[in-house]
Image (cartoon, rainbow over the protein chains, first blue to last red):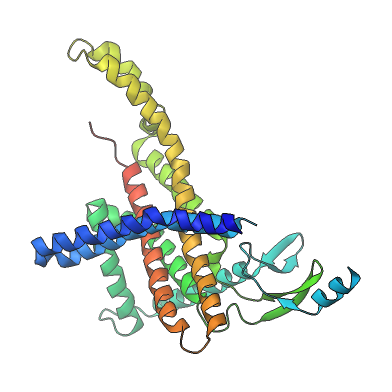
Length: 66
Length: 277
């Protein structure tokens, strides 16, 4: 039981920080160049999905521990 | 002990299992509920394709208009990754079919009858509820199969467009060793650099396996975790609470399909160009 909780708990720290950083940099880039917002938004979604994938790996492990 | 066994038999247990449950068997092959749903998704795609194919007007209206807008959008998106319109047009049918299949499978997992209509089966001492239909990509087999098809296809495209010797040198970089005696007069540092290039080529083999694992687990994890999340939210309060999570799931389904397709496209286009120095 504890293993399941620890797996997802510790595994979500890194991606959480990562997604926050991606969002911060995207907003900063938009502030510098508000016209490029559309392009920045689509690349931001792509980068967020990559970062989330690590959290999802941890979630799958936590589901498969008995 | 005997009283405990009797009481657990009258309770019906439902839990989201990681492995899809088999519904019926054809010969020795068991058909699971996720497989059934993906067959229905394929039938939907076939119906849409035949409807558009039969009457193609020069000035599009209705369903044909929507599909043409979608295809234009995707060709532009693929252009920004491959760099040229003719390459995008070459890869487009292959990658777009990944996108269409995955998005229809993901969205079908959210429909009202999927995951709720089923039968009660006695299994291992207690009764378990087995639904007839379940999201097609919520099964690790399906996503693993899609990932393997994508990565193997990128290798095959690479052999077709580069030839076997150049493809082989991407991974086992023998050309690096053959170049040492030829270029050592012009560039003496090459005796240190090229063995490193050889080892990097060997590491590329391992990163191919990592590509397969990450593609399949990303898609499977997102869809499966969404199912479990919706089930837990509905168990808490079935009337208003799942609504924002439904929106989240629809968005996640579309985004994950897009990401899978874009990643497959970037693998295809990366493998079919030669590496520059």
